[in-house]
Image (tube, rainbow, N blue to C red; front, side, top):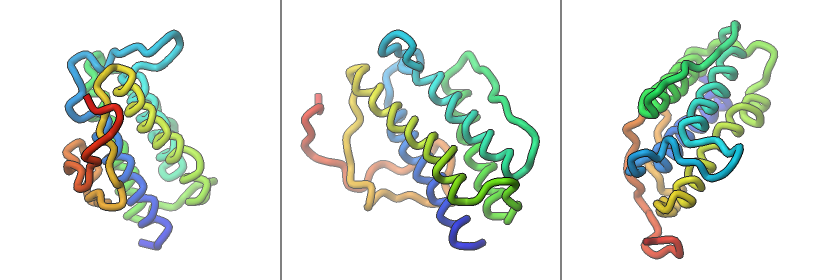
Length: 164
């Protein structure tokens, strides 16, 4: 596997980590939290992240992608992680890019999904249950772990303004 593919796989692992950090220990009903008019709920955001990455995968395998609609937030989260894992498998296997470069994959759909992980964290704050900041340089992120079971922060901030 070349260095660009390794970097993309690691980026997907960072996305899995940051998404789960934003969702871990969220209060019941967080998936349906409405921050305001025309603002996606966390459930809608995760489905959109699934869609963005499923779309990215079409640049490796062709076809089209439509994420499933789930009544349960947990099922949408599981689908999102499934798409992450499948994308990473194709990167590792050397599946050829079709009509896109690794750089454009990173600047487009991968970065879009990471932006939404940040929005999930912001929604946690707006919902009154902020996520503790951490020094991500020390986070235990592994390209081998793209699932929901992500490690706890190694270096969380001890003091932070929003701490309840």
